[in-house]
Image (cartoon, rainbow, N blue to C red; front, side, top):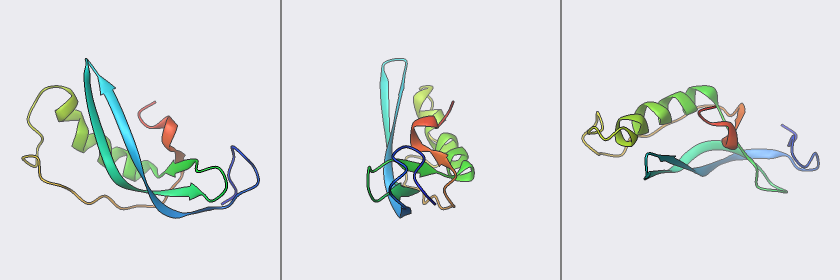
Length: 88
């Protein structure tokens, strides 16, 4: 996939870090599967991956205990959405 930001690089399967801020809390999701531009570093996260990440972090950002008790969950999928657009 050609990067839509720089138009020069090709996005390759990698991982990215997503950061969420809500009500004074910060939640960081590390090693999220994404397609990342080899030229500019722009990350594209698949809709199904976005949904899974939001499912995992939403209880945390609302002050409730995460459904999995705080354990790590692996998220997989194909990229189709820019990381900066997660949750919009």
